[in-house]
Length: 507
Image 1 (cartoon, rainbow, N blue to C red):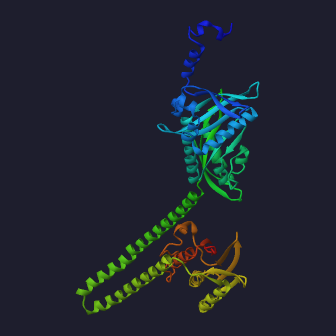
Image 2 (image 1 turned 180 degrees about the horizontal axis):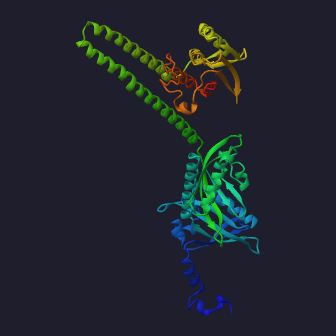
Image 3 (image 1 turned 30 degrees about the horizontal axis):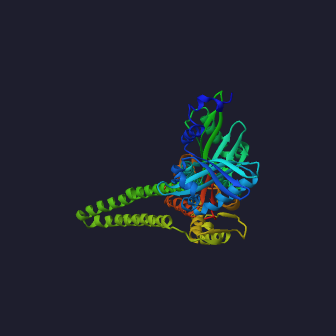
């Protein structure tokens, strides 16, 4: 016995009443339409009463004048496609599935979806059995999701962030378009084996990268985070910040999928390095300022204190005593003048923002210094050896180069050994692409174990030479560093000293 033959199904009602009650429970519009082969026109055979709620048109009005639906409810832009898809479904006897918009008097804009199955009748006509569904809520959610995705993608692009998704079972990683852009590749999403990424990590960063990942998998850290350099397609490394977490585990508790982001922080890293260099400069300047404070505190105060003491004594002294005191005042004045001169010389070096550079012939400038010191060299019977090619030039400040050569040469003569004939050698070499001048002597030498940290300090002397002021090496070091170079020294007591001046020509 078929279910529709069961008399209890209708409870004494007619089948029409029974089916109407069922259809009234369906919120969608249920319809039957026919395309007549003889008239070649569509006609509505049946519409459920939900037409009134969905289209805000009474059932009888719609059946009487269906054009009311097209002209008063449907968006004009959607009418042509509505009819075209219906015609195509009839011709191909394929399922009709179409989305369109309505503008209703009360509900406003509504999205509808119509689906129907066409059937060919014996006389060649086509009958459609279908339904129309209000999908406005779905469309609004879809639109919100689209907007959310657009915002998310925009935020990722604005933050220079890409997304990665690692399938740890297959060891294949999904890379978003923005992440591919960071690598210098075409801005389209792609899939690569994990080895593709690992091969691009800077060798110096591989250990920290592996450790961060291992610590996270061992649950030592709540989330994965690592900063490292990655090789881009232009052959250069960029700093990136990678963050992520495992999102699923297998039945044994092993991670099987992880997702995260990759942020381009190269500019931030460059700023960090720049900031670090700035801090180093500030620390250096503070150290120099402390040196200044030390000089002013001790040397100038000492001169001022002695001067005040003598002036106080001068007021009560007799003529003979005053004559002697004037000689002391003159000595104090001379010492104060020298100290101020040294400070002025140092200030000129430290505060010159951009030191003028010229291409200078190194051998030519050395010859000038040796000519100036001709009498001193002859007096001490110094042997000079010059191993500098004729065409060697340095990009340097002329006054600084003269001062540096003069100071090292005079020091070599001043601290020559009385036990042997003085010898002074000037040698030139290129070390790792950098020009280096070596000035070597066979003089008294310096105990570097004892004086290494104070060698270039102001007013530091290492021999009992009455002409030693302890200012030369301090000024020389500041001049070399002001030009971006550096000084190295090697020395042995009673054997001699070698100073190496490194020229920086990149600044």
